[in-house]
Length: 317
Image (tube, rainbow, N blue to C red):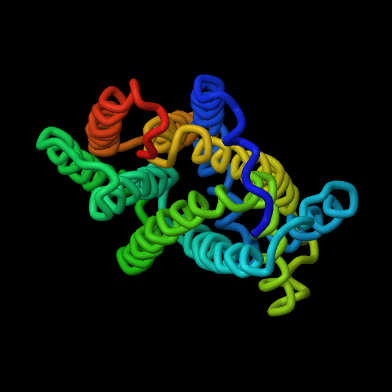
């Protein structure tokens, strides 16, 4: 087995503060990522964007490994687990996520994916790791109602064709499943290898899996709008991939996936503001109302659990 995660040696109060700050940073950076992806994914194919992103990111990790012990101390068993995480979190989740982002508006997609922490919490409930009150079950129903309003309340002028939108919603639901599964896998791996390794090694393995399939797709795009794609890739790789996944893994390690989900569910607000400011897309009244309902449900659901367990921060929720 590889070396244990050194995060466990940090005092609990420090870990709680650090994990919460990491989750707050994710609200901003990941919320803007949905906006940054909007135009590039309507210029080039989302699969091409996937290969560009992880082909370049994998090469960066490979160079970094020459100077930092990123690949050292990992046991054969943990290499297998990291490879499985790469298949689920990179090849699976990232592919369907980019397909969904190429069709849906940022607010609808971010709210669908915000259900991920709820799925993680439900899994913990079924495994007997935590239980929910009747009010929390009501909050889950409120979340579902709010997201339904958001998805159905998109302005008709900005709504894609029915068949295309149906495919986008299906990809969004698949993204939600893969994200929740990769979160659970990450939580298990963080007790076996370091946070840096859980962040970078799946990116490298994902790139090694994807690039041989279409090696020419990792060449820089050409055309009058190629600068938009390249700037988006820079943000997507260095901020949304390297920085944000390190912060996400840190938050999971320090405060647990459910608490991390509580704070990062502020992303819909950032995505909505970014959509209005940078994409100049009006939000439908149904989207605004549904977003407020969903966010209230998220905060009610996770806030109750946070207050319940705040005196016992060692409990994994």
